[in-house]
Picture 1 (cartoon, rainbow, N blue to C red):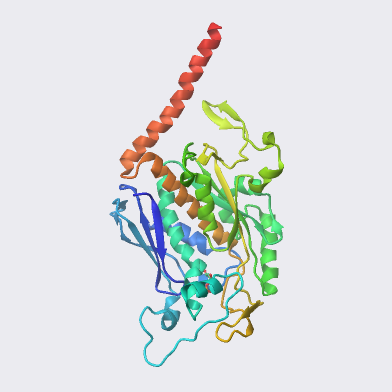
Picture 2: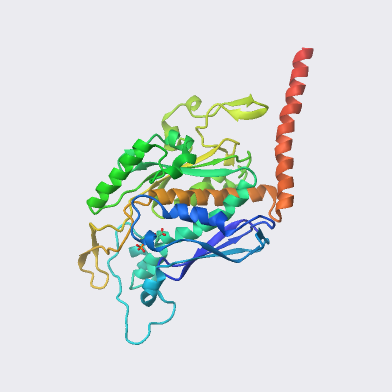
Amino acid sequence: MRFGFSTAGESHGPAEVTLVHGVPAGLGLIADDVNGDLARRQKGYGRGGRQKIEKDEVEFLGGVRHGYTLGSPVAMLVRNRDYANWEDRMSPDPPQGSNSVKKVTLPRPGHADLAGMQKYAFDDLRNVLERSSARETTARVAAGGVARKLLAEFGIRISSAVYVIGAASFDKERAALLASKADESEVRCPDEEATERMKAEIDAARHARDALGGEFVVVAEGCPPGLGSYVDWRDKLDAKLAHALMSINAIKGVEVGMGFGVASRRSSEVQDEIVLEDGRLSRTSNRLGGLEGGMTNGEPVVVAAAMKPISTIARALRTVDLSTYEPARAFRERADSCAVPAAAVVGEAMVAIVLAEAFLEKFGHDNMTDIRAAHAAYTNRLRDEVIRRSAAGKDARGRA
Ligand code: EPS
């Protein structure tokens, strides 16, 4: 089965649940492989009070035995500690006695609220907001942890950096180059001065009872060339990455490599020239973000995303009360004032999941032993071809 995952869970319900299928047998996997990323996702300057309540840790419910995957679906659970405070409003059981739960009827502009109520015929928008909440990204990061563990076995490392928060920005290319240092910054920007400017932006927005979005870049180093494919539109890796990043809450734009910048430049300023260096085919630049023809080309994969500001704001925007159809102000609840640093960690997870799917598609699904052999055979073939053909080329030049 193809590598993939599903999630279940409401923000203030009992738990976030992840089911990852297509995980090969024999991959070493323990809770700490996943918990580190869950903790990174909880961080970030501008988060609300909820993260003081939660301490996200995974429990394996299936697919793992004695520290190794079995090839069966990996089922993971992260409990919502806040459920204890919401049990009356979020219990799966019918309400007890005459206690009726107050309905929420003031949809927030920018949220899933209004279209969600219309589509699913709800009269209480809590039914929508509990699932459309970014709390669901906890379950994605758990799936990403499994994908990352697999990719790490083959030297593929994924990092992220934030380079825009509101009006404060840092150079995108430098952010991508320094991404492995981003964990040191409260906003995941690998520059101290820019970090301070971004924090000041968040403070100012919070002070104005508003919220901020931003941009982040995800970098995957160590991918072999040829993940994804040009032969069928469904297998184009850049399209899958765009889908995966765009599916993260509040993402409104995705760029691959230099992104929209390609449109205004000449071809010679956009393509990455091919050279033989240290016995390997490489590039003099990486403007196309390591992706050509829907495949990895062996350079780092570089993708970026733009997140809009969170739509739950104290400075409530105009809406219509869906119980009376009278003009009103949007629903307010405790929320983050900026979640871009957390979204970057979710971006890493989504990129890892897409790369793991493509990696297993190329090298097999069943077990780590056969996958290691297939990967070694492929990388050896590419290396040997360079040696053999460049020797033959030298011979031919010698004879001429
Ligand atoms: C969210 C609102 C906040 C965030 C939440 C997403 O939660 P609460 O309503 O409980 O204060 O903290 O994100 C998380 C809980 C999380 O772990 O990322 C929303 O409205 O989407």
